[in-house]
Amino acid sequence: MANNRRMFLKMTGLTGLGLLTGSAKGSAISGSRSEEIKKSHFNMSGYVAGKLNTVRLGFIGLGNRGPVHLEHNSKLDGVEIKAICDLRPERLANAKKRISGSRHHPDSYTGNDTDWKKVCERNDIDLIYIATPWQLHTPMAVYAMNQGKHVAIEVPAATTLEECWQLVEASEKNKRHCVMLENCCYDFFELLTLNMTQQGFFGEIVHAEGAYIHDLMHLNFSKTKYPEMWRLKQNFKNGNLYATHGLGPVCQAMNINRGDQMEYLVSMSSNDFSMKHRAEELAATDDFFKPFAGKTYRGNMNTSVVRTHKGKTIMIQHDVSSPRVYSRIHLLSGTKGAALKYPSPKISLGHEGWMTEENFKLLEEKYKPNSVKKIGELAKQIGGHGGMDFMMNWRLIDCLRNGIPLDMDVYDAALWSSVTPLSQQSIQNRSGSVDVPDFTSGHWKKNKPVDLSLSQGGDTKVNLE
Image (cartoon, rainbow, N blue to C red; front, side, top):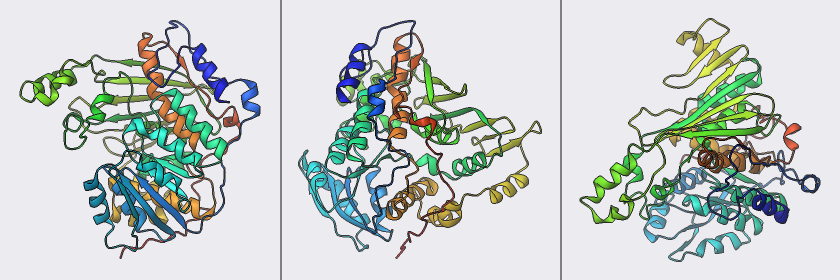
């Protein structure tokens, strides 16, 4: 499988672990795999690895997102936190403080940039959380799966097509779950509209929009938040660098990978009107930023558009350097109605316009998913982006404990992450169309949609003491 995939990458000019650099203007790059590969393919969609009455956890990366996942899991019954790891001792110490009042006393690994491998190699760990810089996500996840561990990776799961395929192959070969921690799939309006979609309220979804529009200029240039400035360096690439927050929820609503599939993508970016100027401005008074002053940065706004095999469309936008109000858009447009989240949640039916707030509340109560009924208010109380972080972590552990399929699998992780390198390739070819690889190897035609019913599971308890 690996050799065939690499032959495909070589033939299309996409070899190596770096950015896509194909040069075939005027034609789409083929993302399909050979029939030989499809026949040997193991389908991880809907896969059940067996019940884990107690899920034993290891955590790699305790900077920004890792401690949140650590603290949330410390509140769940049926969980044992066995190991925590970070290169920086101070981050490890801060993480331990966050769970100091809990029953968990994990082993600590710090000070060596290969200590994370020791965590992966332990025999008493079932699931490893990975919350490290983006470029480390795939190498760590692949190693962990090869050691027989399930993995939960912060977004994006991969930064290149090569890495996307590596995740798929490692998950299939080892029959280990590989889930990307896309928390926006568990935000309350997204869950509501997914349930409404599955119950036919909007008719058939024909178009959707998602985005990550978030002014991160201060954060991207922060020396304290990102000491190695790895996130700023990611912005040297031009494209949709952070597609999954807006893309994940609409893909679930449109049954992407589960009844439909992305066919091809086109992408366009504006020039950069902000980041180079900020780098030069900072470099004038701080020598630390001089290496960043002469760099070329991605454009302010990227717009990528996808067409699916069933003739539906998705628009995804990315802008983190313009002074705009935060938005993920989250628009679902169906044959009977529509939903739009920002600037405030709205539902429409037919041609009657947006519903009144009173009618929206009635619909919200009628279509509230069982998972929200079960854990929603508690999740809001515990927090994490308004509760969606906790919803995600609770659901992941509950699925593993009850031996039921996960809401997100390795094909979602690969496909949603692939929009970044595919958008870069399209931009390099003057917004030419790029074929989207089928990471499911054709199984999308029969894979079942995400199940919100809680027909199984839902019994993992939360301890707030």
